[in-house]
Amino acid sequence: MNMKNERILKYYNLFLDDFRQPSDCLKYLTDERYSTEEWIIVRSHEEFVQLIQRKWTEREFVRLVSFDHDLNDEHYDPSMFKGVEAYENAYKQFQNPTGRRSAAFLVQFCKENDIAFPNYIIHTMNPAGRERIQLTIDKIFDSSGSKNGDV
Image (cartoon, rainbow, N blue to C red; front, side, top):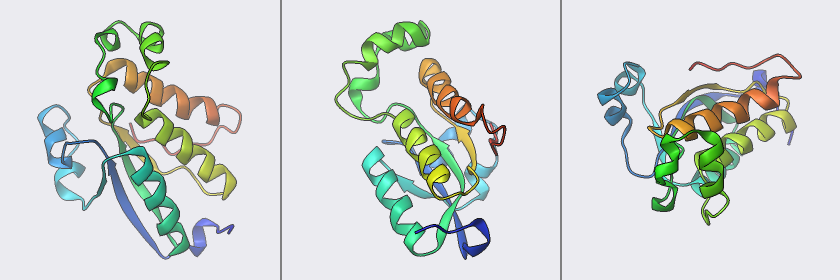
């Protein structure tokens, strides 16, 4: 189903995090949208994908997405404080998808459906994870030059 932006009837905000609530982000971020916006909360990559696909069939799409990186206990590795290269070694051992895979899914979904990437926030407290998500989004859009990011 290929649906352009003008065919979308409703937008929603999507919060991806394994345990936090949107308001918890106000403890370390100053973005008031965490307290003023309504959010649909998903706790895993699988829930993220299923919700986006289901809502798309109902002519709804994400207006704002907030990404966590660490969606499982195995993602909390001390190397996350030593940079992306150090964290990559730990990442290769993970059995469960991180928020980076969710970001990559959404980028691909937008490309396949010819729709603009939604505004986004990366709220993870993992510095290497934050950079990995941002690089994933930036890499995809380097060639097109268009992205809506709201970081």
